Image (cartoon, rainbow, N blue to C red; front, side, top):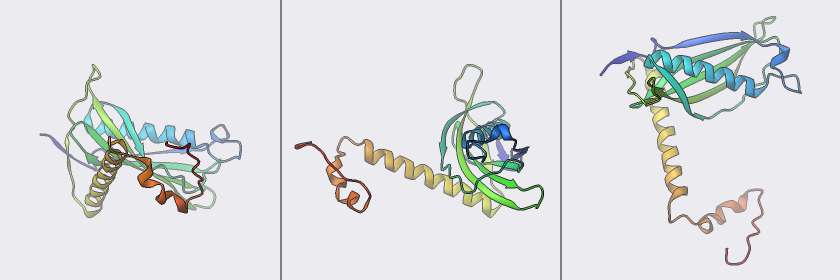
Length: 183
């Protein structure tokens, strides 16, 4: 099997935010930012796998700070985890006020990308060479997210699942359950 370092596919891109990228409140539109994130995830995963890649899922998209028109946005991406045909690309988004130099962390997200051949069939990706503590931590966090997702899917997709087992858990939330009799 072929192995590659994380540094060999690490990538960043910067773009000046313009009025055409803004939403109705004058901040940069979240959908535009997600588009940029998808582009850098594709570039990073394709660089690692040396083939075309598609987005399989997006995990943990939290918009932490708004981005202003005129800010310089920098996206940084690296491979955090590899499976057989998939890769988790970690993305960090920062905005910089070019007048003051103030930098804000705006978003961190994780895109799962799958490598494809010319016929659309999934292909094996190179393994990962991890060479520092931060990279180990990122790989382990990706494993935990994967395990949590699988556990959640198993729990809620089980043939034994019944909503009545969870009704007491919902009492502390702002929800009123009004189910018909014998539901």
